[in-house]
Image (cartoon, rainbow, N blue to C red; front, side):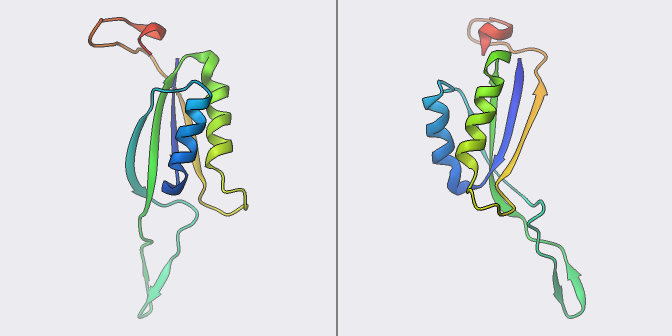
Length: 113
């Protein structure tokens, strides 16, 4: 089991969500977050460097069984990219998921996902 965390631009959320549904990935968690990566603009105001502004982003958390990892990642990459080579399309993190428990039925492991 893996936990796939994707940070994408807000305007790509609908594209990514629809693409995931088409790929039979229907269980996702969406959070609105802020941050900055390489697209930071360091401003200088009155000779002082000002910290870059935090930019609104969307965080997707998707728990999947191992056989769905590549499908999920490829789908997110295809749908989240603006295709213009600009910085800021986002990142995907894949972490091992030790355990998953469905509270209602007490199922554990891959069946709970």
